[in-house]
Each structure stands twice: as C-alpha cells, then as structure tokens.
Length: 229
Image 1: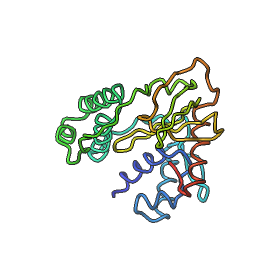
Image 2: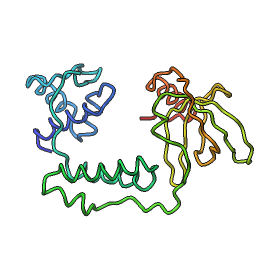
Image 3: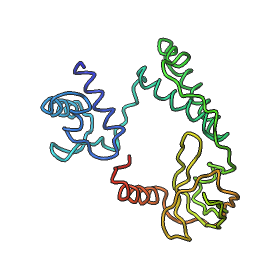
Image 4: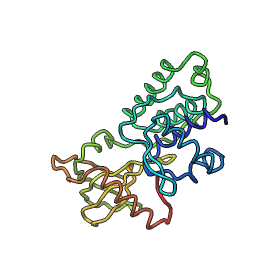
C-alpha cells in the first residue's frame, strides 16, 4: 500500500473504532511496521488531522474531525450490498424495504465505474427459503418501552413476562430478542417465533439504550469468554 493510501486508511480505521487504537493494532491491520505507523500518525497530526492520544495508549479521532468520508471502494460496496441483501431476505417488512432502498441509494450515489459492483456483485446472500414469520414490530422495540409478552418455550409451556428489549439478532431461520426480564431479574433470549402475544406498554423502562446494551454485552462476555464488538 502506498503511503498516501495508508494515511487515508489510518483515518478510516480511527473513524470506525470506538476505543483508542494502538500502533500495534493499526500496524496489524495495515500490514505495516509499527515504526511506520508512528511516522504516519505524526504526519497526520502535522497535517492538522486532529488525532488524540499517544504511543502506548492508542489514538482516536477528535470529536471535531469533519473530513467527509471518501468514495466507497469496490470491497466496501460489495460488503454493504451483501449485508443489505441478507436483511432484505430475512428482515421484517420494514427492515427489508429499508435494505432494498439502501441498495438503490448506493447505486444512485456511486460513480459509474463502481455501479457494476452493485448491479452484478461477485458475492451474494443465499436466498432464505425458511424465513421465520412473527408479529414482533422491530421499530417499536427502539422506543425504550417495556413489552409484556406471552412466551412458549421449547417444552411448549407458556409464561408471562415483562421485558426490556436490548437487541434483536438474526439466525438463519429465526430471530432472537435479547432483553432484560423483570421476572428473572436477568438477561434472557427469546425466539420471536415463540412469542405468542406482545403488548407494548406505555411505561418506559428508563434505561439508556447504550447502558442496557453494554450491560448485556458484559454479561455475554463473562458467560462465553468472548469479547463482543
């Protein structure tokens, strides 16, 4: 990779990194020597790219950094289209429509030379012939409201729960709702196709979405021993 490309890639890595990125991490992703990374970061600072941090502790982009994103690369376009195709096949009606709109917008905004990567991508999401159908409205789960559900477990036993939705994950044939369960006073995962009924309550759970998600992540990391992104 030429040096100008490496400088731009460092900016992109820092743009998508939520925690300080060390020179070692940057060097590993760039497949470059750490001394080259130190020199590149110093060059960026000299060019008034507002990095914060220092060697050993990691680097982040300052919050006032306002360089617009660069034109997408072919690999980035194919990654975005692949993800959108997957959601279009497996998401609920609202998300599926949004995914198709996203592909159309990428196609309209991309330069002419990059449009073949959208119209005829070299990779594609497999057609989902076993998509789960359920009545859970994902849009409402973002509102911070409690949900009262009737849930039928794998033993075909019903229970009533009041939950605080955290995140919805997609498997090949089902969706999983991670939520704080008031009954169990702990995080639980519910297959949405086993939710017999769902009532979105007017009462909000009061937890900030980011805080609730971080608590769930810490719990999962403790149980599985794997760091979640």
